[in-house]
Image (cartoon, rainbow, N blue to C red):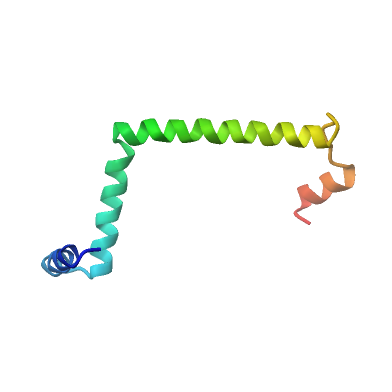
Length: 86
């Protein structure tokens, strides 16, 4: 953060009777909310989601190949342990 920005945040925190940490947190929360509705950010988020889905599909296919096309099914004991939280 530049010295000028930090100085402005310090003044705003003082004027708003908040700590610098609280003023910074509020500013970041505002920026995050604003960014979440920005068209460019939304477009990029969709691109990243599609990349993640492609990667996941590649990894699923790799696992299937390792397993010889057989999907591993949990044994009765493994299912029982999973459901009991053991």
